[in-house]
Image (cartoon, rainbow, N blue to C red; front, side, top):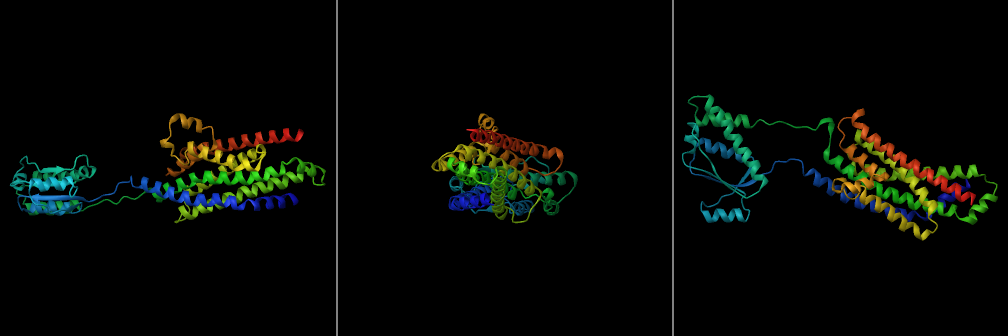
Length: 386
């Protein structure tokens, strides 16, 4: 196993450089994934309280019932009932909603009259629209009781409203889905493409640069070691190096993004990353055959990895890239890797129809791997004859 041992010695010299990319991956991926997950998770609906000035010109059971109901969604702010003070409070955002109940409102409402509440709000505030829905729900429900029951007192009406509006519906995500965790995992595995490919290119290029040295190849040709044994040991090391690199990077992903154990989506993330590692290995092998100077390897590595990462959806989400950029990116394996991750993160059902886009992406990556490996074999054969 002389060739295999030599490969280990070559790799050992490059461990400090490879560790830099591992540390970069841990740092950047953790920060960027957490921020992206938080931003997208914040898009999910959550109720929030609004600062409200409640000005009532009468004190009736209906008004008190409304105030009790609004307390679930509002922080009441005491303000003097003066025009200038109210305007200042809105301007300086001490309150975003001023609700005024005019004198005689309750009696007129109970008699079925057309009465209106007075409101003053901060322009274009989304929270006020949500608050309007709550007020409308309260009085629309009250109107149904007033129309259906004769001689209904305000106290009875408030009790009915309290009972009805206290009922809530519990919403659970199907199939044990955890949106924030999947968003985090999706971003984390997307960033994996950069570091995984960088490590493979640096390791494989350094390895192939040594074995492609003309003098070393001539000495190997004169040695009793057969070409078959030489190639077998080299292929064995390449497979182990690729597998070990993939296992280390995936372990980091699992450690940070799957605190609650593996689910079905996680398994597909792993499969997709394994297929991409095969493709990245074939690209690294081809680059190792092309590069002839050790000083050029880091530059080539940065150009390839950063270039693919920026316009294939790794660092910049695909939603922000133009159609022309995405069409160009579709000729790279990184694009199909990221596309598969995005499909996996959105999976809720696991049948042939829902898995078809992911399978197509995996096949495209394998096709790229086969193409790069074929080119590498042709180039290697040509050099051998030369």
